Image (tube, rainbow, N blue to C red):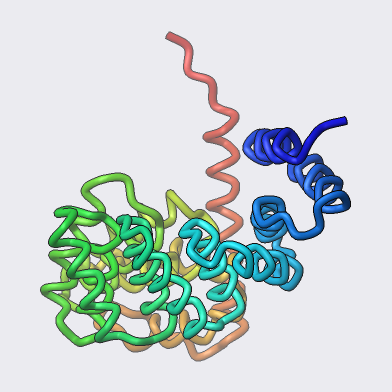
Length: 287
């Protein structure tokens, strides 16, 4: 019969190997024997949280912390669980306790994220700036400060910071924010590059397709803009109103008096684009 330490090791190995069912089974087996074991409660909370089972995860991490209140990893997990529930004050309290015990970089990044998600903009900005001082070039801090600068109406600073953030591999959201900042600076060509990259990374990013269409239209490439608008419409038909407004209000726009006609045009362009994509996929190039 495995002792508690062996069950913890086996459960950890199962979890790290991508076998949450096995990890959960082993944790529950161990807790049947040792109901108050804080390590098993912590591990089971992590397993459940990874599966989106939030309330039971919260209950198990609370039991673990009741026995080990100074355990920094448990505090960090408790903060993440609380944050997922929208309990930002509780999350920040856990993070402050974790930082007091073990002031590691990860803890400060998590606190900055939590302040950001809680809408505490000034505190979040200060936290991200502090991280950037300690870790110059920290991508997430640079990207978030860029986004905050844009929200403050400083598109030039935003574009500069976001361009730094995408110098290394960056998610679609950061490329999208860069596109928005460049668009506000009337750099439509630069915005189009950013939106295309966002769509490359996240092909279902409907807002990026819409904004790409606007940027291309402002650049005078109305045909390419229609292709982007067709993609946006295909991804999210509810954007039709935004597409119609963009097409009729821009300096290089087209006047559409018939909504049905515009819908047909978007659908027709979308069909043509799909046909061309299929033909490209079937094309075989022989050396």
